Amino acid sequence: MLLNKGGLIASALYIVHFLLFSSLSYFAGLKASVLLAEMAVLPAGLILGWVWLAFGLHDPPFDTESWMNSYLFYFPVSLLISYMFGWMLHTLWRLSLRYIGPGLERIDVRLIKRLDRN
Image (cartoon, rainbow, N blue to C red; front, side):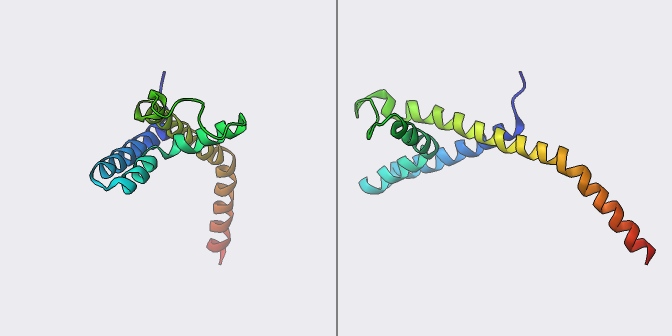
């Protein structure tokens, strides 16, 4: 099974993002470290926040000190979300090249013929 190039690039960018914000949260003060730690797992926090609201929950359905409220859960979920986002962008790019690209090439040929006549 081949992995998508766009997904791998987005995953690599997310890993750099996670390492940067998690290391900054380690060296920051208490309030800033909480904010930076939340920024480190931002994709999972955004998506799962909408999921909890869709189920009618105001808070996550697990305890505050559960393993599901730690990096062990949020990092892989964020990595999967970033891969899927990169896969989606890469697919949209490929589809736009397939369907819009030939039309742009015809426009280029017409433009070159028109400018070459003058």
